[in-house]
Length: 286
Image (cartoon, rainbow, N blue to C red; front, top):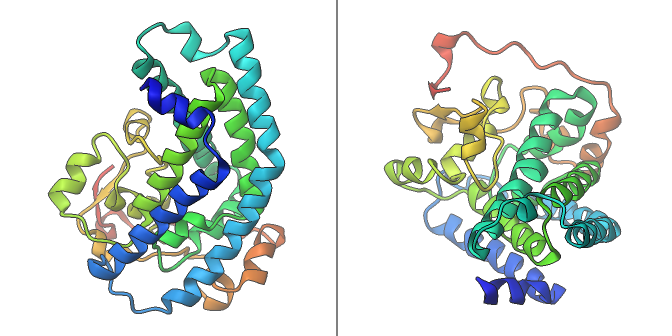
């Protein structure tokens, strides 16, 4: 663990970029070999649309990186945060730090964006994707990237995480997002077993169902325990029957046009239709 922390403490930005790019490439290839859904869409065009949002996310993250670094340095110097309050071996304190970061900067802000209407209009750009695959993990409106960066600052301070742990978390978070969005088939029994601890592809695909109430479940990114603890966990009988996208933005001109996607947060709010009756829902457990 000491070697891992030391490596991430001084990891060059080029190394982190290489790790993340390798993750995208790996899952992209895997999707072509064992897809959950047959790739009956223009995969490359879809990837280009989502890649535009990767660039905007990079710009936002670079612009706000100093806030994250400052909060990590301040928490460390003041010995403030969970990692300083709960003594233990390094592996345990690092794990606690990553868990707090995952809870606040992934699960909590994700939940809030689903509950606050004006924030939802930024987040729905991610949900409007009707072909969820590894590139969907890159699809976030720049406004949402700001929300997530600010909650990361909060999470870093609450965790008391030094910059090495922040980099470990951010790398793991990005890789897990690629993993649980990727369009590849995992044996159902294995997926369900893994989902007791981590967010798996089938578990997260439920979150991308085009209708409520399933849209408002499974907010986690790395650890699945948050959804189980806060009772936002749901399963479906067959993930292959999930329809992706949003019932308010199913037209291709709205969910696949970059210009429209960028302006959605500034368009009039669209109220979600009422969910179908329980007997018509494919919910296995909620």
